[in-house]
Length: 157
Image 1 (cartoon, helix red, strand yellow):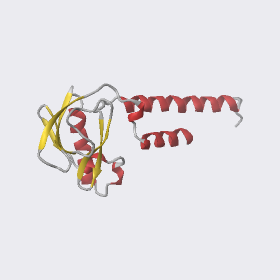
Image 2 (cartoon, rainbow, N blue to C red; image 1 turned 30 degrees about the horizontal axis):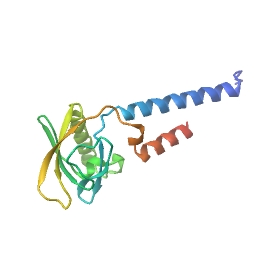
Image 3 (cartoon, rainbow, N blue to C red; image 1 turned 90 degrees about the horizontal axis):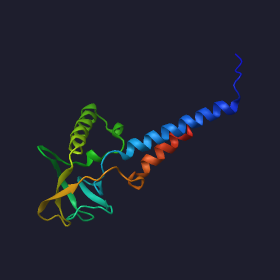
Image 4 (cartoon, rainbow, N blue to C red; image 1 turned 90 degrees about the vertical axis):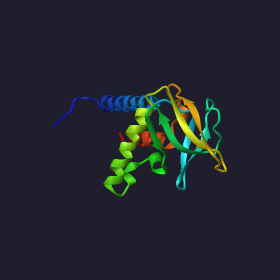
């Protein structure tokens, strides 16, 4: 089987495809609305781990987030809701539960604002805080794991 295409054309096509897929991945990753804060699991709790420039009033670094609410939908947050890789879950029932909860969180993000039930450190009485959903995320809001996986994908393409 003889291929009459020059190797540079084949490599250029592969590189162009890798760059296109990289741009699509970044575009899709910044589309969900930003909250102006980041959450992290700490033990059996979910806490505010980073505040952005447009952080909601009434939320401080280290505060515990108990419930997310938007309209009639409400969900008590669990550390498992913040898994970066759900395939690490051992049981299918937990795997399916993770995606069911993510579907509810996605529905909530379609609203213009959310309410968070926040307990200030050292975890006193909880109060509801209004969070206006911002537009698309900034590139700097994307976690290191995203960039690492994209880089691996481009490298191995």
